[in-house]
Image 1: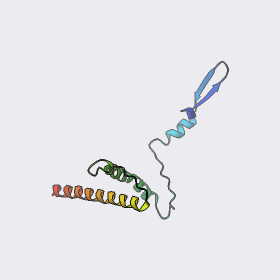
Image 2: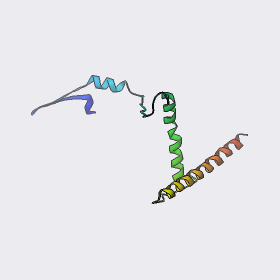
Image 3: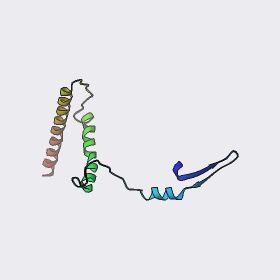
Image 4: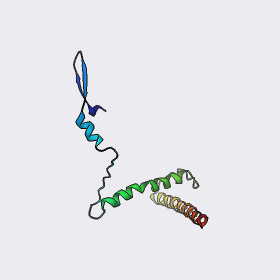
Length: 111
């Protein structure tokens, strides 16, 4: 909020005024978000980047389901990289089986 007000503080007074320019500049961006990437624009177009960003919610839901839901995976601490990779692989494989089972059930009930 401080960026939207100009303050004048003296020993015996305090005055403030609204900074119309910063308020208007921020209002122009209402409802807009910016996606920044280090990928070259010619190999990954902006529309594909936005689509990938919006698809992150599916990945986040998957990780949330890994921790709760049917899989009920709990934190397991591994020290060796090989074991960490194996653990992640098994969790992802189990999640795929659960996801595939749910998607098959949806198709069966739709028929």
